[in-house]
Image (cartoon, rainbow, N blue to C red; front, side):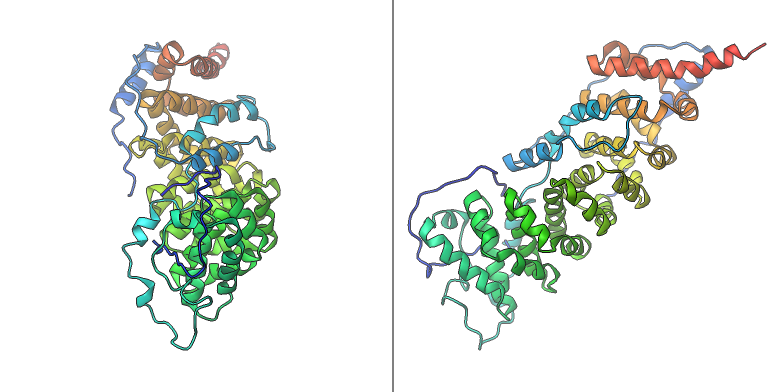
Length: 450
Protein backbone atom coordinates (compact mmCIF):
# COMPACT_ATOMS: atom_id res chain seq x y z
CA UNK A 1 0.00 0.00 0.00
CA UNK A 2 1.59 3.26 -1.09
CA UNK A 3 1.28 6.53 0.72
CA UNK A 4 1.11 10.21 0.02
CA UNK A 5 3.21 12.92 1.53
CA UNK A 6 0.08 15.02 1.66
CA UNK A 7 -1.77 15.06 4.93
CA UNK A 8 -4.61 12.60 4.60
CA UNK A 9 -7.09 13.93 7.11
CA UNK A 10 -10.01 11.72 7.85
CA UNK A 11 -12.95 12.41 10.07
CA UNK A 12 -12.29 13.41 13.63
CA UNK A 13 -14.24 10.58 15.17
CA UNK A 14 -13.23 9.76 18.69
CA UNK A 15 -11.31 6.55 19.00
CA UNK A 16 -11.34 4.98 22.47
CA UNK A 17 -8.01 3.63 23.58
CA UNK A 18 -9.54 0.31 24.44
CA UNK A 19 -10.49 -0.16 20.82
CA UNK A 20 -7.49 -1.72 19.25
CA UNK A 21 -5.93 -1.57 15.86
CA UNK A 22 -3.15 -3.65 14.49
CA UNK A 23 -2.10 -4.63 11.05
CA UNK A 24 -0.05 -7.78 10.79
CA UNK A 25 3.41 -7.02 9.81
CA UNK A 26 1.46 -7.26 7.43
CA UNK A 27 18.52 -12.69 -11.62
CA UNK A 28 20.53 -12.53 -12.44
CA UNK A 29 20.64 -10.06 -15.29
CA UNK A 30 21.30 -11.50 -18.71
CA UNK A 31 23.00 -9.16 -21.08
CA UNK A 32 22.54 -9.39 -24.78
CA UNK A 33 25.67 -11.05 -26.01
CA UNK A 34 25.11 -10.69 -29.72
CA UNK A 35 26.83 -7.67 -31.14
CA UNK A 36 27.49 -9.07 -34.55
CA UNK A 37 25.87 -6.14 -36.37
CA UNK A 38 28.00 -3.72 -34.44
CA UNK A 39 31.09 -5.73 -35.23
CA UNK A 40 30.13 -5.74 -38.90
CA UNK A 41 29.49 -2.03 -38.88
CA UNK A 42 32.70 -1.40 -36.98
CA UNK A 43 34.74 -3.41 -39.48
CA UNK A 44 32.93 -1.78 -42.35
CA UNK A 45 33.69 1.63 -40.90
CA UNK A 46 37.34 0.83 -40.45
CA UNK A 47 37.60 -0.42 -44.02
CA UNK A 48 35.43 2.14 -45.72
CA UNK A 49 35.88 5.00 -43.22
CA UNK A 50 32.42 6.19 -44.02
CA UNK A 51 29.48 6.74 -41.72
CA UNK A 52 26.06 5.59 -42.66
CA UNK A 53 22.86 6.68 -40.97
CA UNK A 54 20.62 4.08 -39.39
CA UNK A 55 16.98 4.74 -38.65
CA UNK A 56 16.11 4.64 -35.00
CA UNK A 57 14.31 1.59 -33.84
CA UNK A 58 11.21 1.88 -31.74
CA UNK A 59 12.27 3.11 -28.32
CA UNK A 60 12.00 0.77 -25.40
CA UNK A 61 8.82 1.34 -23.50
CA UNK A 62 9.64 1.52 -19.81
CA UNK A 63 7.62 -0.09 -17.09
CA UNK A 64 4.23 1.21 -16.08
CA UNK A 65 4.88 3.28 -13.00
CA UNK A 66 2.68 2.91 -9.97
CA UNK A 67 4.71 4.97 -7.52
CA UNK A 68 2.76 7.05 -5.04
CA UNK A 69 2.95 10.77 -4.53
CA UNK A 70 5.59 10.23 -1.88
CA UNK A 71 7.63 8.22 -4.39
CA UNK A 72 7.57 11.14 -6.76
CA UNK A 73 8.17 13.73 -4.06
CA UNK A 74 11.19 11.98 -2.58
CA UNK A 75 12.55 11.44 -6.06
CA UNK A 76 12.29 15.16 -6.68
CA UNK A 77 13.91 15.94 -3.34
CA UNK A 78 16.72 13.52 -4.14
CA UNK A 79 17.46 15.56 -7.23
CA UNK A 80 17.98 18.89 -5.47
CA UNK A 81 21.14 20.38 -6.84
CA UNK A 82 24.10 19.30 -4.71
CA UNK A 83 27.52 20.84 -4.51
CA UNK A 84 29.47 19.49 -7.46
CA UNK A 85 32.81 17.88 -6.65
CA UNK A 86 34.25 18.70 -10.03
CA UNK A 87 33.47 20.12 -13.46
CA UNK A 88 33.26 18.17 -16.68
CA UNK A 89 34.32 19.84 -19.89
CA UNK A 90 31.71 17.74 -21.68
CA UNK A 91 28.74 18.98 -19.69
CA UNK A 92 28.40 20.95 -16.50
CA UNK A 93 26.98 19.34 -13.36
CA UNK A 94 24.03 21.70 -13.62
CA UNK A 95 23.29 20.53 -17.15
CA UNK A 96 23.45 16.90 -16.12
CA UNK A 97 21.14 17.52 -13.18
CA UNK A 98 18.68 19.16 -15.53
CA UNK A 99 18.78 16.14 -17.81
CA UNK A 100 18.48 13.73 -14.92
CA UNK A 101 15.15 15.16 -13.80
CA UNK A 102 13.73 12.09 -15.52
CA UNK A 103 15.30 10.16 -12.66
CA UNK A 104 12.42 11.31 -10.49
CA UNK A 105 9.98 9.64 -12.87
CA UNK A 106 11.30 6.34 -11.56
CA UNK A 107 11.75 7.28 -7.92
CA UNK A 108 11.24 4.44 -5.52
CA UNK A 109 11.25 5.66 -1.99
CA UNK A 110 8.21 5.60 0.22
CA UNK A 111 6.91 4.27 3.47
CA UNK A 112 5.41 0.78 3.59
CA UNK A 113 6.76 -0.03 0.14
CA UNK A 114 6.71 -3.24 -1.86
CA UNK A 115 3.25 -4.30 -0.78
CA UNK A 116 4.80 -5.46 2.45
CA UNK A 117 1.57 -5.23 4.43
CA UNK A 118 -0.09 -7.70 2.09
CA UNK A 119 2.92 -9.99 2.26
CA UNK A 120 3.19 -9.84 6.01
CA UNK A 121 -0.52 -10.52 6.34
CA UNK A 122 0.24 -14.05 5.16
CA UNK A 123 2.69 -14.66 7.99
CA UNK A 124 1.68 -16.44 11.20
CA UNK A 125 -0.04 -14.11 13.60
CA UNK A 126 2.22 -12.80 16.39
CA UNK A 127 -0.37 -14.09 18.84
CA UNK A 128 1.03 -17.55 18.10
CA UNK A 129 4.51 -16.45 19.07
CA UNK A 130 5.86 -17.21 22.54
CA UNK A 131 4.58 -14.58 24.97
CA UNK A 132 5.21 -14.21 28.66
CA UNK A 133 2.02 -14.94 30.61
CA UNK A 134 3.16 -12.81 33.55
CA UNK A 135 3.67 -9.59 31.58
CA UNK A 136 0.41 -7.68 31.05
CA UNK A 137 0.07 -5.38 28.07
CA UNK A 138 -0.15 -1.67 28.84
CA UNK A 139 -3.69 -0.32 28.46
CA UNK A 140 -5.36 -3.71 28.49
CA UNK A 141 -6.30 -4.86 25.04
CA UNK A 142 -4.78 -2.00 23.07
CA UNK A 143 -1.45 -3.55 22.13
CA UNK A 144 -2.93 -7.05 22.08
CA UNK A 145 -5.33 -6.52 19.20
CA UNK A 146 -4.05 -8.16 16.05
CA UNK A 147 -6.33 -6.56 13.48
CA UNK A 148 -6.73 -2.91 12.70
CA UNK A 149 -6.50 -0.78 9.59
CA UNK A 150 -4.96 2.46 8.44
CA UNK A 151 -8.47 3.85 8.10
CA UNK A 152 -9.17 3.15 11.76
CA UNK A 153 -5.92 4.78 12.78
CA UNK A 154 -6.67 7.85 10.70
CA UNK A 155 -10.02 8.19 12.46
CA UNK A 156 -8.33 8.83 15.82
CA UNK A 157 -9.31 12.26 17.02
CA UNK A 158 -6.57 14.79 17.88
CA UNK A 159 -7.40 14.61 21.60
CA UNK A 160 -6.98 10.82 21.55
CA UNK A 161 -3.80 10.84 19.47
CA UNK A 162 -1.37 12.00 22.15
CA UNK A 163 -2.36 9.40 24.78
CA UNK A 164 -2.37 6.76 22.03
CA UNK A 165 1.17 7.66 21.05
CA UNK A 166 2.23 7.66 24.71
CA UNK A 167 0.93 4.11 25.15
CA UNK A 168 2.94 3.03 22.11
CA UNK A 169 6.12 4.79 23.26
CA UNK A 170 5.77 3.21 26.71
CA UNK A 171 5.34 -0.15 24.97
CA UNK A 172 8.71 0.31 23.24
CA UNK A 173 10.37 0.17 26.68
CA UNK A 174 8.64 -3.06 27.67
CA UNK A 175 10.81 -6.13 28.42
CA UNK A 176 8.44 -8.13 26.23
CA UNK A 177 9.44 -8.49 22.57
CA UNK A 178 5.78 -9.03 21.68
CA UNK A 179 4.82 -5.72 23.27
CA UNK A 180 7.70 -3.89 21.56
CA UNK A 181 6.74 -5.39 18.22
CA UNK A 182 3.09 -4.36 18.63
CA UNK A 183 4.02 -0.83 19.75
CA UNK A 184 6.44 -0.33 16.84
CA UNK A 185 3.83 -1.63 14.39
CA UNK A 186 1.25 0.84 15.65
CA UNK A 187 3.66 3.77 15.56
CA UNK A 188 4.60 2.74 12.04
CA UNK A 189 0.99 3.04 10.87
CA UNK A 190 0.29 6.15 12.92
CA UNK A 191 3.18 7.82 11.08
CA UNK A 192 2.33 6.39 7.71
CA UNK A 193 0.02 8.95 6.12
CA UNK A 194 -0.38 12.00 8.31
CA UNK A 195 2.18 14.76 8.70
CA UNK A 196 0.69 15.95 11.99
CA UNK A 197 1.06 12.44 13.40
CA UNK A 198 4.71 12.34 12.34
CA UNK A 199 5.41 15.63 14.05
CA UNK A 200 3.71 14.58 17.28
CA UNK A 201 5.44 11.18 17.36
CA UNK A 202 8.80 12.82 16.64
CA UNK A 203 8.35 15.07 19.66
CA UNK A 204 7.11 12.25 21.90
CA UNK A 205 10.45 10.51 22.50
CA UNK A 206 9.59 7.62 20.19
CA UNK A 207 12.72 7.95 18.04
CA UNK A 208 15.33 7.12 20.73
CA UNK A 209 13.14 4.19 21.79
CA UNK A 210 12.78 2.85 18.23
CA UNK A 211 16.48 2.94 17.36
CA UNK A 212 17.57 0.06 19.67
CA UNK A 213 14.93 -2.12 17.98
CA UNK A 214 16.86 -1.80 14.72
CA UNK A 215 19.31 -4.29 16.23
CA UNK A 216 16.60 -6.57 17.62
CA UNK A 217 17.06 -10.26 16.86
CA UNK A 218 13.36 -10.59 16.06
CA UNK A 219 13.06 -9.76 12.33
CA UNK A 220 9.47 -8.51 12.50
CA UNK A 221 10.20 -6.13 15.35
CA UNK A 222 13.21 -4.84 13.42
CA UNK A 223 11.08 -4.44 10.31
CA UNK A 224 8.38 -2.47 12.11
CA UNK A 225 10.99 -0.23 13.74
CA UNK A 226 12.86 0.62 10.54
CA UNK A 227 9.62 1.33 8.68
CA UNK A 228 8.36 3.53 11.52
CA UNK A 229 11.59 5.54 11.34
CA UNK A 230 11.28 5.80 7.56
CA UNK A 231 7.75 7.15 7.91
CA UNK A 232 8.83 9.59 10.62
CA UNK A 233 11.79 10.80 8.52
CA UNK A 234 9.38 12.12 5.89
CA UNK A 235 8.68 15.01 8.28
CA UNK A 236 11.45 17.56 7.85
CA UNK A 237 12.06 18.35 11.51
CA UNK A 238 12.30 14.64 12.36
CA UNK A 239 15.37 14.17 10.15
CA UNK A 240 17.60 15.97 12.65
CA UNK A 241 15.96 14.17 15.58
CA UNK A 242 16.64 10.77 13.96
CA UNK A 243 20.20 11.70 13.00
CA UNK A 244 21.08 13.18 16.38
CA UNK A 245 19.73 10.08 18.13
CA UNK A 246 22.42 8.03 16.34
CA UNK A 247 20.20 6.17 13.90
CA UNK A 248 22.56 6.10 10.91
CA UNK A 249 24.81 3.28 12.14
CA UNK A 250 21.81 1.17 13.14
CA UNK A 251 20.10 1.77 9.79
CA UNK A 252 23.28 0.56 8.07
CA UNK A 253 23.13 -2.51 10.32
CA UNK A 254 19.58 -3.21 9.08
CA UNK A 255 20.76 -2.67 5.52
CA UNK A 256 23.27 -5.47 6.09
CA UNK A 257 21.24 -7.93 8.15
CA UNK A 258 17.52 -7.28 7.78
CA UNK A 259 14.74 -8.97 5.86
CA UNK A 260 14.29 -7.97 2.24
CA UNK A 261 11.68 -5.38 3.19
CA UNK A 262 13.76 -4.10 6.10
CA UNK A 263 16.74 -3.58 3.81
CA UNK A 264 14.60 -1.71 1.30
CA UNK A 265 13.11 0.55 3.94
CA UNK A 266 16.50 1.13 5.55
CA UNK A 267 17.80 2.29 2.16
CA UNK A 268 14.82 4.64 1.83
CA UNK A 269 15.33 5.98 5.35
CA UNK A 270 18.99 6.70 4.56
CA UNK A 271 17.92 8.46 1.38
CA UNK A 272 15.51 10.60 3.38
CA UNK A 273 18.26 11.49 5.87
CA UNK A 274 20.68 12.19 3.00
CA UNK A 275 18.46 15.08 1.96
CA UNK A 276 20.32 16.87 4.74
CA UNK A 277 23.57 17.67 2.95
CA UNK A 278 25.71 17.18 6.06
CA UNK A 279 24.48 13.60 6.44
CA UNK A 280 25.84 12.34 3.11
CA UNK A 281 29.39 12.06 4.37
CA UNK A 282 28.31 10.46 7.66
CA UNK A 283 26.17 7.85 5.89
CA UNK A 284 29.04 6.94 3.60
CA UNK A 285 31.56 6.84 6.46
CA UNK A 286 29.26 4.54 8.46
CA UNK A 287 29.55 1.90 5.72
CA UNK A 288 26.27 2.28 3.84
CA UNK A 289 27.72 2.03 0.32
CA UNK A 290 28.77 -1.68 0.23
CA UNK A 291 25.40 -3.02 1.47
CA UNK A 292 23.62 -0.71 -0.98
CA UNK A 293 25.70 -2.26 -3.75
CA UNK A 294 24.77 -5.73 -2.44
CA UNK A 295 21.09 -4.72 -2.56
CA UNK A 296 21.66 -3.51 -6.11
CA UNK A 297 23.06 -6.91 -7.05
CA UNK A 298 20.80 -9.35 -5.21
CA UNK A 299 17.76 -7.37 -4.14
CA UNK A 300 14.25 -7.58 -5.54
CA UNK A 301 13.26 -5.20 -8.32
CA UNK A 302 12.01 -2.79 -5.69
CA UNK A 303 15.22 -3.21 -3.72
CA UNK A 304 17.31 -2.41 -6.80
CA UNK A 305 15.28 0.78 -7.33
CA UNK A 306 15.77 1.84 -3.72
CA UNK A 307 19.50 1.12 -3.91
CA UNK A 308 19.84 3.09 -7.15
CA UNK A 309 17.97 6.10 -5.76
CA UNK A 310 19.99 6.15 -2.54
CA UNK A 311 23.32 5.65 -4.31
CA UNK A 312 22.50 8.49 -6.67
CA UNK A 313 21.89 10.87 -3.80
CA UNK A 314 24.90 9.75 -1.75
CA UNK A 315 27.26 9.80 -4.73
CA UNK A 316 26.83 13.51 -5.27
CA UNK A 317 30.00 13.87 -3.16
CA UNK A 318 33.38 12.56 -4.24
CA UNK A 319 34.24 10.35 -1.20
CA UNK A 320 31.06 8.35 -1.74
CA UNK A 321 31.78 8.02 -5.47
CA UNK A 322 35.14 6.50 -4.53
CA UNK A 323 33.48 4.19 -2.01
CA UNK A 324 30.92 3.06 -4.58
CA UNK A 325 33.56 2.28 -7.20
CA UNK A 326 35.65 0.40 -4.61
CA UNK A 327 32.56 -1.55 -3.52
CA UNK A 328 32.05 -2.81 -7.08
CA UNK A 329 29.01 -0.73 -8.00
CA UNK A 330 30.02 -0.25 -11.63
CA UNK A 331 29.60 -3.87 -12.74
CA UNK A 332 25.94 -4.26 -11.67
CA UNK A 333 25.18 -0.79 -13.00
CA UNK A 334 26.53 -1.71 -16.42
CA UNK A 335 24.51 -4.94 -16.31
CA UNK A 336 21.32 -2.98 -15.58
CA UNK A 337 22.09 -0.57 -18.42
CA UNK A 338 22.53 -3.51 -20.79
CA UNK A 339 19.34 -5.28 -19.67
CA UNK A 340 16.61 -2.85 -20.69
CA UNK A 341 13.90 -5.39 -19.90
CA UNK A 342 14.17 -4.53 -16.19
CA UNK A 343 13.05 -0.95 -16.74
CA UNK A 344 16.00 0.25 -14.65
CA UNK A 345 18.42 1.10 -17.48
CA UNK A 346 17.83 4.84 -17.40
CA UNK A 347 18.14 5.04 -13.64
CA UNK A 348 21.33 2.97 -13.69
CA UNK A 349 22.81 5.25 -16.36
CA UNK A 350 22.29 8.30 -14.16
CA UNK A 351 24.24 6.67 -11.31
CA UNK A 352 26.85 5.34 -13.74
CA UNK A 353 27.39 8.80 -15.17
CA UNK A 354 27.82 10.16 -11.65
CA UNK A 355 30.56 7.62 -10.94
CA UNK A 356 32.19 8.40 -14.29
CA UNK A 357 32.85 11.85 -12.87
CA UNK A 358 36.01 10.54 -11.19
CA UNK A 359 38.96 8.87 -12.90
CA UNK A 360 38.55 5.58 -11.04
CA UNK A 361 34.95 5.49 -12.16
CA UNK A 362 35.83 6.09 -15.81
CA UNK A 363 38.32 3.24 -15.78
CA UNK A 364 35.84 0.88 -14.12
CA UNK A 365 33.06 1.71 -16.61
CA UNK A 366 35.32 0.91 -19.55
CA UNK A 367 36.74 -2.21 -17.90
CA UNK A 368 33.26 -3.60 -17.16
CA UNK A 369 32.06 -3.21 -20.75
CA UNK A 370 30.21 0.05 -20.24
CA UNK A 371 31.02 1.43 -23.69
CA UNK A 372 29.30 -1.49 -25.42
CA UNK A 373 26.27 -1.28 -23.16
CA UNK A 374 25.89 2.46 -23.75
CA UNK A 375 26.18 2.05 -27.53
CA UNK A 376 23.39 -0.54 -27.35
CA UNK A 377 21.19 1.99 -25.58
CA UNK A 378 21.86 4.58 -28.30
CA UNK A 379 20.77 1.96 -30.84
CA UNK A 380 17.74 0.49 -29.08
CA UNK A 381 17.00 2.50 -25.95
CA UNK A 382 14.18 4.88 -25.07
CA UNK A 383 14.32 8.51 -26.12
CA UNK A 384 15.42 9.57 -22.64
CA UNK A 385 17.78 6.62 -22.38
CA UNK A 386 19.59 7.73 -25.54
CA UNK A 387 20.11 11.16 -24.02
CA UNK A 388 21.58 9.63 -20.86
CA UNK A 389 23.78 7.27 -22.87
CA UNK A 390 25.30 9.87 -25.17
CA UNK A 391 25.96 12.22 -22.24
CA UNK A 392 27.71 9.43 -20.33
CA UNK A 393 29.79 8.50 -23.39
CA UNK A 394 30.72 12.14 -23.81
CA UNK A 395 31.88 12.20 -20.20
CA UNK A 396 33.98 9.07 -20.76
CA UNK A 397 35.59 10.23 -24.00
CA UNK A 398 36.11 13.98 -23.67
CA UNK A 399 39.58 13.78 -22.14
CA UNK A 400 40.53 10.25 -23.19
CA UNK A 401 41.87 9.50 -26.66
CA UNK A 402 42.04 5.83 -25.63
CA UNK A 403 38.35 5.69 -24.81
CA UNK A 404 37.50 7.37 -28.10
CA UNK A 405 39.40 4.69 -29.96
CA UNK A 406 37.63 1.97 -27.99
CA UNK A 407 34.26 3.54 -28.77
CA UNK A 408 35.07 3.61 -32.49
CA UNK A 409 36.12 -0.06 -32.40
CA UNK A 410 32.89 -0.85 -30.55
CA UNK A 411 30.97 0.38 -33.57
CA UNK A 412 29.72 3.54 -31.91
CA UNK A 413 29.93 5.95 -34.85
CA UNK A 414 26.96 4.76 -36.99
CA UNK A 415 24.39 4.89 -34.16
CA UNK A 416 25.80 8.26 -33.06
CA UNK A 417 25.39 9.58 -36.60
CA UNK A 418 21.80 8.30 -36.63
CA UNK A 419 21.16 9.97 -33.27
CA UNK A 420 22.64 13.26 -34.49
CA UNK A 421 20.10 13.21 -37.31
CA UNK A 422 16.94 11.90 -35.67
CA UNK A 423 17.30 12.31 -31.90
CA UNK A 424 15.90 14.98 -29.62
CA UNK A 425 17.44 18.44 -29.79
CA UNK A 426 19.58 17.68 -26.72
CA UNK A 427 20.61 14.25 -27.99
CA UNK A 428 21.51 15.64 -31.43
CA UNK A 429 23.74 18.29 -29.91
CA UNK A 430 25.55 15.82 -27.64
CA UNK A 431 25.94 13.28 -30.44
CA UNK A 432 27.42 15.90 -32.76
CA UNK A 433 29.83 17.02 -30.03
CA UNK A 434 30.92 13.44 -29.37
CA UNK A 435 31.35 12.73 -33.09
CA UNK A 436 33.60 15.77 -33.26
CA UNK A 437 35.80 14.29 -30.53
CA UNK A 438 35.86 10.92 -32.26
CA UNK A 439 37.21 12.50 -35.47
CA UNK A 440 40.09 14.23 -33.67
CA UNK A 441 42.39 11.17 -33.33
CA UNK A 442 41.96 10.50 -37.07
CA UNK A 443 42.83 14.11 -37.87
CA UNK A 444 45.86 13.95 -35.57
CA UNK A 445 47.00 10.72 -37.19
CA UNK A 446 46.48 12.26 -40.61
CA UNK A 447 48.47 15.38 -39.75
CA UNK A 448 51.38 13.30 -38.43
CA UNK A 449 51.67 11.32 -41.68
CA UNK A 450 54.67 12.21 -43.96
